[in-house]
Image 1 (cartoon, helix red, strand yellow):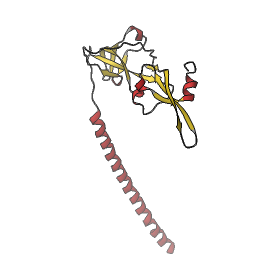
Image 2 (cartoon, helix red, strand yellow):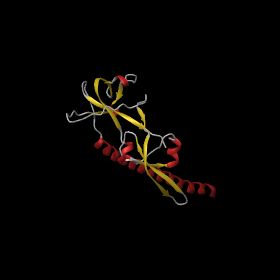
Image 3 (cartoon, rainbow, N blue to C red):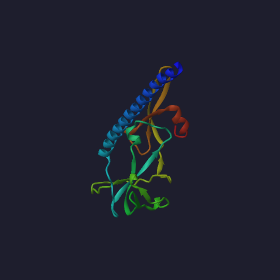
Length: 191
């Protein structure tokens, strides 16, 4: 008789524990839904629906590819665009066919809308049609032009020598601090 009584008494707390866990799961799901809704509202404010028509002119985004990874650099990671190019026609909802110049004819001429930026014609605009060595994945290689300075960054138990590097297609104001040994190892012929 005592064993039956113990079984009943020990099963009641387990049921309470399960119910408590289920309530916490509901609370967590509700909070996740609230957070998702808040994030969606933030994203929707910044989202703009782009649409182009045949005959519009757009810039085409390129992705700079460098040997040294740089995070937090305003000038270096800013997207680069070439163009303007005329839109020949629309393909589907989010793809466009562009009229590319002869030096880019080997590449596929259909691009996703995320790779395009609207060009607003301005007579005072001077567009530099600088020739870039663009690869098939629309990336180009940056190379150092000059070393403008050097310094030693002190950490807790070691010192890291840094050099101020000016990159090709960028001015002195966009120079970045890089590790000296990485620059010398990657570009020994330059320095």
